[in-house]
Amino acid sequence: MEKLYSHLALVFSVFLLIKLVFVRFSRRNLPPSPLALPVIGHLHLLKKKPLPQALETLSSKYGPVLHLQFGSKSVLVVSSPSAIEECFTKNDIVFANRPRSSVGDHFTYNYTAITWAPYGHLWRSLRRFSVVEVFSSSGLRRSSSILENEISRLLRLVLKQSRSGNQEVELRILFNILTTNITMMIVAGKPAIEDEAAAADLGIAKEFLSEFKEKFFAGVAMDMRDLFPILRLIGYKGRVEKILSKVMLVAGVDTTAITLEWAMSLLLNHPEALKKLRAEIDDKIEDGRLLNELDLVNLPYLACVIHETLRLYPPTPLLLPHLSSESCTVGGYDIPQGTMLIVNAWAMHRDPKVWDEPSKFMPERFEAASGGREGFKYIPFGSGRRACPGAAMAVRTASMFLGSLTRCFDWEKVGKEVDMSEQCGISLTKAKPFVAKCRPRQNMIEMLSQS
Image 1 (cartoon, one colour):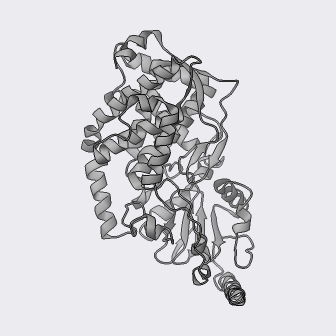
Image 2 (image 1 turned 90 degrees about the vertical axis):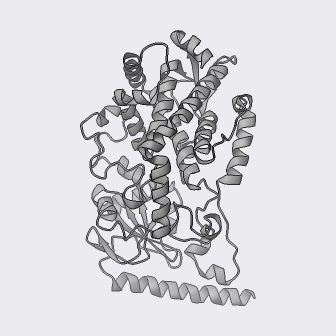
């Protein structure tokens, strides 16, 4: 049996080497590419850094349209507005599919979930239903009371924590609980955690969220059998990596909570921005009430803070992958059928050729009439047919939470600076949870106690 495995591996290696050489010399108009190794292709170039940074390093050397080989998979990486526009306008239908994978067969109900469904009648029906019933203007109005109730709950929980003794508050778990509740109320009509005492106990909350995600958030990252198909023939079972990926639960829970945590961290590290935001809120909202959805149109700087946070820290730094259903051209290069498309939003959002002082937190860049979002230089929610349908709901929810916390509490850093270290997987999260000191503002205590 060991000899059989060795012979199969040798045959596969020779076959793949011949294929790589044939592709390199027969299709001379492929995008630029580093030298690939036999069998593994370019995987060895991605080990030392998180994937968005590793791909950015390669793009800075070879250009914003880059061809890579991940085992047997052909991969196109794009990271410039013009290349992304070409993918999602001229070639939008070509790239409207998602790659299939071994574990995806099991965790996406045979690709019937909207995020992973192939482009066609099923996907169009699911998309139409989600847009009309949940994410339309009428759908957002129907969910307003749910959002306001959960914001009141958030404020009560923060008030309890701020009075617990040391006044230090960790918001990551609270954000996850409350965004989970909102999404579950919209989807199923019932919150994930109804008991407010349980939500206030971080130990109980963490345990619940862990169990909840194990049960409901099943998904697929990558299986080595997809990169090296011969492994299927020799009985290799693969390693399934669980990530947060059922559709609305991810869009409504994880990404919004991540954005809120980054936004609070950025504001505390930039007190002048926090002061400007609070002044806007205090000026536009009279005393004696909380924010409501109708206030958002009068709070443009709040929207700027959210968009600047999404630019610096897009929750999904590499947009969900696409797959070319036929051959096409991007940037003047030939792209073969069956190529996986990876859009490096993280790299483009920090590209000095695209943005002035890209590493600087500067919400004012979105105050222009175009909002700093012209063209395809800002794409935290993707673009084209497979763009996130819940973008408006995500921005609205994040704005309401952030505005309410800013209005009702005084915030203070723990230490000199909030740690902004990144932990990059499928999502771009803070390596260390956000922790800050807070106390209720004097003019808000009575209202908070009654909310």
